[in-house]
Length: 372
Image 1 (spheres, rainbow, N blue to C red):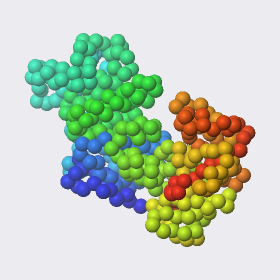
Image 2 (image 1 turned 90 degrees about the horizontal axis):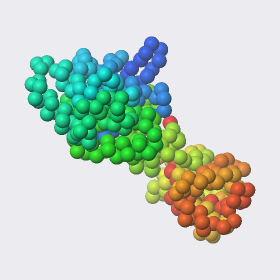
Image 3 (image 1 turned 180 degrees about the vertical axis):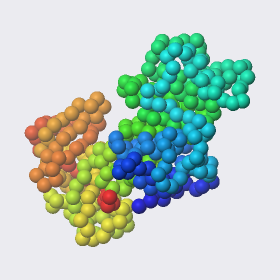
Image 4 (image 1 turned 30 degrees about the horizontal axis):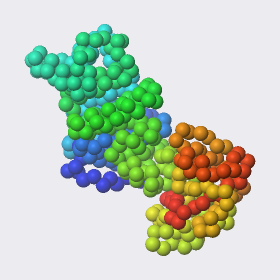
């Protein structure tokens, strides 16, 4: 089914309109319908082989749709070669020229323009681009003299020096260590806000997409599974695939007993009756799946007498710094995860591996998932 976007044509800088891409018998992208809002930071998120890079390459002009169209500023660009589109791309390996200086790398695209730009203008634009990415004094250096994070900033400067309407980012932080990746995420966000350029990121890293994006387009098997803000996808996942991929979730089988005012009472396989959000359609008697995030469950040594309590055995306690992850086993519900801040964990004397803990389910916690 085609996904209907809520962005109007007037707001859109780019659009996929029933866009399909096949490689022989392989369906890489299936009837994509998506408008990208001018000036937004949008991420294509998903596992390997889901179609996210194919979508990016069709927007860049490196691939031609088998069916449908790709539009930029309302105009079909199917016949427009990559070098004539108002789009620049930062590749995963940066694709910098090691025999050139930093400034020469940044100036490369400007030197290809016809008619040629005056040398003074090229030098001025290169200097502004390097200042923008905080490399103003690095122009004379060779690429091999730069760190990984600095090389990424050179690639960004080279991409923005042509003042594109859309900047495409193909997993540009995959090669960076975790600390540097976090720093570069903040730099990219600040750069996007400063420039006002539409950024389109491809990533398989859910935390990267959640922390950087105005909207996320989650893909699976060549199709769009859900589009929305990071909070939309995390708090209101459309189906099991979205709930499983974005963050972590306990997904439990249940039967709906009542639905009223957006809250459903469901019976879990363990027999407990709990209240959960009914954002997706559900009726009494339906067999459904319910997702509950690990951080929304509470653990106690005993039932509190006020909220539904589910006893389960602690199988693992994993120290994560500011949080403790509890893995538990229940004979009817299977494996369960709970994530507690360290302060909350300190208030639980006697909770250890092998002990029985009581999981408390607050009113409305969890969400009934829609069908795939």
